[in-house]
Length: 134
Image 1 (cartoon, one colour):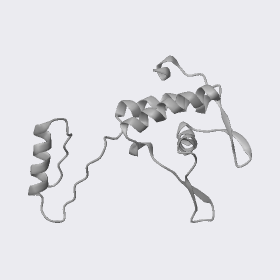
Image 2: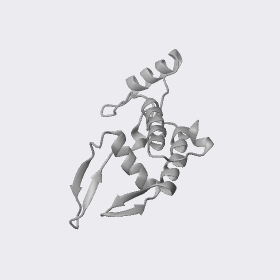
Image 3: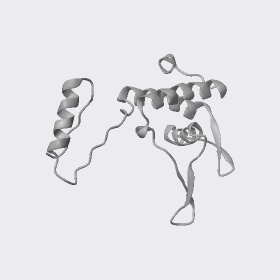
Image 4: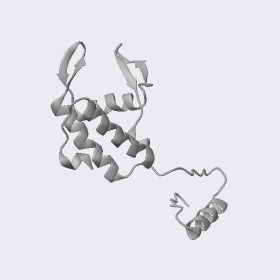
């Protein structure tokens, strides 16, 4: 038995998961967790982040500049988590932000993230395309 994945939707799946746990050799581990965000949820954030990238400049190293959607994701994810990221010294003396990753968000948290992105976009005057406003 290498790896088994069970989605606990009913009695049969729970029974199979229990059987797999009892059959697992010593040293194996078992993780029960809330499901992470879906691919559809992940896709929903990118048009919003692209709108930020196209419509809003941000100060970087003291100058206003256009950021990529990925850079906006870093800034907005930090703000979503109340900017509780950590700052580490880089290998060459620079600074590296140690933030969170949205791939680790649960479905519920990712839904809250998308709602929050919409509210920040409105607050900052970002115009979203209709497909971004679902």
